[in-house]
Length: 499
Image 1 (spheres, rainbow, N blue to C red):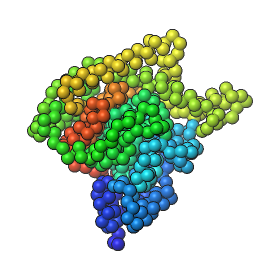
Image 2 (tube, rainbow, N blue to C red):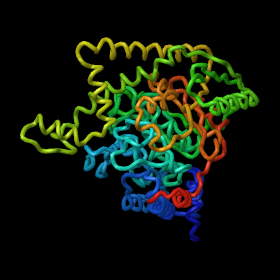
Image 3 (cartoon, one colour):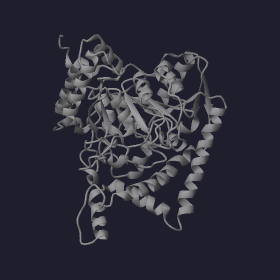
Image 4 (cartoon, one colour):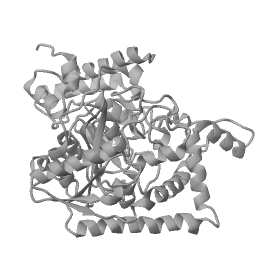
């Protein structure tokens, strides 16, 4: 068998690699070696990975090749190299959540979503960088190093799943998984020029995902195009006995939705998403996308979601309250970092002070305050009421015949590293277009639409509960050909970035 160019292999999407594996023009070991070689070459610049699982990846790839030789293929994902955000528990593999407090944590079990992929023959390249405990919008809150955007290494890849997005965009994995609590898959997808999906809450099991805000967290997918994203969703969706919030619904072949026509569909444009703070160029791209849908036979209709302006502030009460409760388990007693002191109380205080970064501490304190006696009703309970109003807005719109909504994915394209670190409120505003969807538990799909200068510009689709198929249909119709970043090493030399 001749050896194909490694640069060709790493640029392939899932379907192209699966076809090459089937045609025996490449082996899974060759593909995995190509990806590991590219990681070794450029990830010291991008910092997309925290842990690279080279030995496991090669062993998984060899096992896939052996199955293929025996005619026992496990499906289109068999032998395809991928990566996980470092918030997915992986048995026997370091899982840090990009935090010092879990710097040496090795889980004794696997997250269900990863387990499902592994059973389908996925090859794990490693664990991707992120904002600590998924708290951030830029990946600058990682306790180890900030990830960089492949399109401009002086800019952020977004957060909190920035490493997963950067890895997919820079061909350091064929596809990746992340998590999305307030936009942590969709915003990085927009910044890095890839497809990012947050499914309906309950569509994918959350078991084995280190929790941030349990009523908002959802596993998400990064892929090079919508059809790849649909393929992965079909592989990981479904009911899980270990997650009571996962729904017992049939899992369709989502890739079929990518072949459907948008003719006759009604697409809503929520006016609240086009207000102050959204760059004019992004609004122009959305208007252009709406015009294209009309040309394809869809109906465009302006709609209103009147409680949208309250979503961001409500989210940062609800999410921090849940984080305060979830992160109480990191006490220096059961697992993770332990700073030994004379008594349990001092040990706990020292451990949490040294183990958590500034943003995590900020959110724990905000959440603890919102849950405290005398403030619980004024803040936490009020937030739950606002959440219901937000969800009701969407229910009414979809009940009125709207198939899906088209909105910006983020207020701007990727901003520069360090630009917003001194202003947490400005950083929180990066999530203004994505947070409402988590509050309502709905599916959201972000896809690359075009370049703005050298930077990707993405748009977002929002669906009714378990309406992912319609998102894939519209997203496939609107997504641009794959956007490719400039050479990473050339960028680093030009900008003086030291690996």
